[in-house]
View 1: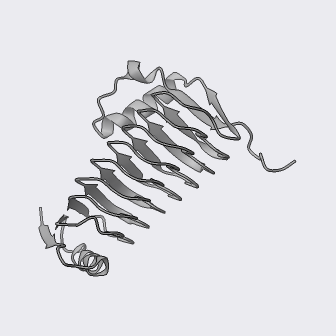
View 2: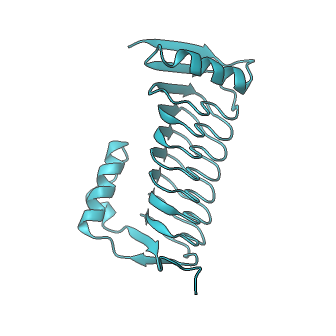
Length: 223
């Protein structure tokens, strides 16, 4: 495997991203050392390269990517995976608000907890949260799948239009135009395959207690 190491210490996000875009066509894996919780790391990257970030990142990690696999070996700030169209972002720690907001495709995984508005206005793709989430998960969701293996806060599914949210823990309450339904065996199998792919220790039997949340109406804002 062709591997490149970039030391981010003392570098501005623009310099880090310029180096990534320069080296991504030449290497299979790029390791970023000393990221210093900087914002916008890997913004707009389109090469199918693995980027390993050895530490925590700030806001908008992997925003608007199309292709790479990004592994964050720490925590992430707000809006990781914003407007992703293709690729993977895996965060080994916790994340802030807006995980996967506006995404069109790809997968964003947070092994720990996440903040508010996970998957807001997402159109497609998959978001998996290993811990708890706060308010308004799936707000204005237009498609895709959100899986929460912990608890979900208030207004879950607020004004969602399409897509589906699965919660393994407790759901504090539902938002407007959201309803809870019983998942079927096909739902359980699909969720199990997704969480197994990312090495979450959850069995099919565990997932039979999922709450599935879907829109009540297709056109809730029209009389």
